[in-house]
Length: 469
Image 1 (cartoon, helix red, strand yellow):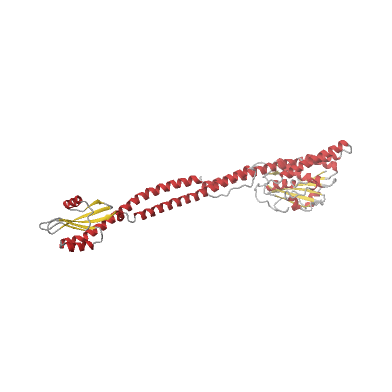
Image 2 (cartoon, one colour):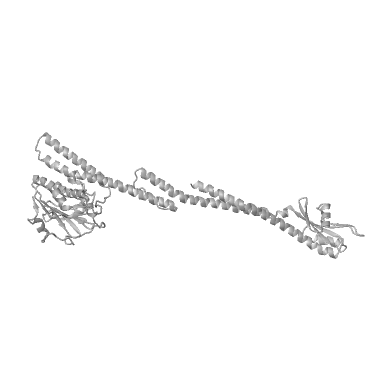
């Protein structure tokens, strides 16, 4: 494209220069010729007054010698009793002089090395004298070569300038196109961070904007795929927890050891998948408009599953606030996955026999789900909430809390970790009911949430009205 623009500019400018320079050069040559003959006419006019005064040869010779041109000659015909007078060097042909005398008007004629101007002058005797002024070719072409050289220089400068401007314009157009090509090549090679500067002509800027938008969408799609793989893999942790607990109760023997080894290896493989995929950006977990689920029903269902494991390990458990429907604007599967992640962490990271509780508080604009345990607690809640910052101890991937956080933040809520009234960890999941997704809100329990029963939080957890195990 760059060289095509240069060639087009070269051709167009050359045609314009030729179209203007050639006629202008001819006009300059004609002007130089007119100037030379105008000077010759002026020299001839200087001699005419002398002829009207005298016809004496000596006086006329002085007049001719004092004329401005050295090529001036005077031709006086023979009269009655007077001979013909020829003063100066005659270059014109005799028939041209006679023709001028007969016509009675000035004329030009060819001469060796130039041209001559023949100017007739009427004498007092009625005869016609002819003044001849020689105009050499050098006088006619004087300054023409210089003018043509200037025109040629100007034309060449115009051509070079137009080529330079076209080249710069070509660079301005080609470089953004080349960067677009390089960005597409890098993106095709798997460099997902490849972006194109949005500069250049309008069309190329729009192309760069479209390319960057496409690249962002590709990155987001890949991130969502990784996130989905991580979430699905993490959901496998729930049945794996059951398998591990059941395998632990098999007793001794080769089959039991092999089963426990297989479960441990499967857990390691799942953890590897989660760690590999967990660097993806979080995706939105909010349900669409009008969608949602009954949080109380989901809690009852999942606690029905985990209560069996709790009985096997001698864990006391408690559920409160699920005696009536509690609608939340999240998908049922996502809420179930979040609860499984929280309860799975309780079983994985607390000793057997550790009690836990799940409370659901329904307010006017939000629902709070509290998962509490009587375990050793979390020494660094901020690190636990940070995705990918888990140390991997005891099989922890750091993804479980991230699943819960994304669920809450998709509704405009948040997740916090604090001390439990049972003596361990309390994880509070704030789910916004009006579905105003935005910046997560940091609220305490004493916000606009309407408590289902009076009393302190300790009373709510330990009250006998809850469902216990």
